[in-house]
Amino acid sequence: DEIRSEIVEKLELLRERPKRTERPYIYHLDVGAMYPNIILTNRLQPSAIVDDATCAACDFNRSKNGCKRRMEWVWRGDYSPATRHEYERTKDQLSREMVEGEPFVKLPKQTQEQLISDRLKTYARNAYRKTKITEEITKSDVVCMRENDFYVETVRRFRDRRYELKKLTKTWKKKTTTAENASEKKSAEDRALIYDSLQVAHKCILNSFYGYVMRKGARWRSIEMAGIVTKNGADLITQARILVEQIGRPLELDTDGIWCILPKSFPDNYNFELSDGSQIKLEYPCVMLNADVHDKFTNHQYQTLTDPERGEYKKRKENSIFFEVDGPYRCMVLPSSLEEGKLLKKRYAVFNFDGSLAELKGFELKRGGELELKTFQSQVFERFLDGDSLEQCYASVAEIANHWIDVLDTQGESLETDELIDLISENRNMSRQLEDYGTQKGTSQTTARRLGEFLGAEFIRNK
Image (cartoon, rainbow, N blue to C red):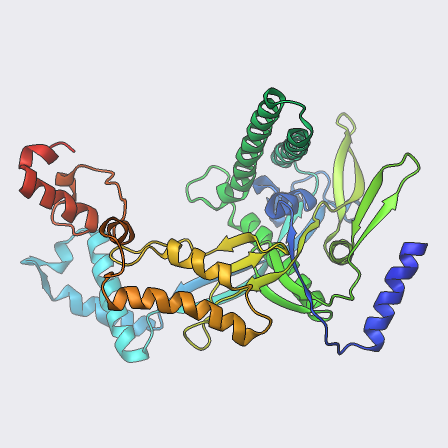
């Protein structure tokens, strides 16, 4: 009751005085194992997407069973702006032409279709100033809640096993700090590394359950199921953004999460002490979103087979979709877009309160023939926390930028030869032999050819 009263008091103060001047907190709110948990919550599997004919032949096809759950998904398609008449006219023109000395009509069908497509694309670009029109149509399909749940249970077992491995990873990481000697510490570190590697492997397999149904030629390919999964994921993040906008401000949206700023006075973390002396941590921003997800995304029709002989099922509510919170953080740097109307996605740097870099995305780039950008970026990021105002921060960052501009303008006169070579060189590997690339140009191929000219052809043969 004491914690509840404290939370209610803070929320009431925010409601009474919504306009505030205070330093906000930065949070990352993301859904744990989003796609696998959407599959589990809605009992989604390729064989469960059924049509009217399938339901008509089913013994359970009665409204009282509630086994048909209709779900929406979005179909997106691209088509040419050219009309049917323009397509026929283009095809007729090509039928009278010669292609590399051979009549068009005698070419293979695949080649004919490609030539028609290329000609029509050129015509559309000139006539309509675009080569395709993208259309989105919202469709709906029925998901059977009584289909054999082999696919769903396989996903569940992988997910639960990954959760176990993540717990073991945390347990052994804690043991590294309490180890009494070097041998125990090394053993704990090794165990933590093994369990962490296993949970990452399980994560890759879990994500492939969604990717598999998207793959063309897959035995259980189901574009309907894949569409339902992605639409539910998009709706989850959209709903979270709407809720965050009422309290703070969203900064960056990911596929499975949202970076945002919330007022410092907003309820944060609370600890409940249990009768056995242990504690449970309550992260209020996370609880707030999970309550919203529970209201809007719970499956009230989930059914489990209880008696195989009599064909009896038990209906229950199911929702394993939960937000997780990371933070708060001290600072988040988002680069501005170079073009109006075009946003830069997944490019940001996040800092902890101790000044360390918590997360970096989209900046680990190397470009051939230029300064190694990692060196420049690492120096710049250290300066983003300098100063007490935006002007002082920019001035500190500008010092680094001006230094590297001087290096470029003077062509590295102030640098040692070895240091300059390290900055302008890059490491690349060729996956095939040099002869296989033919006349293809690239830094790797050009370097190999020049080595052959300098050291002799025998040096690069069969390499």
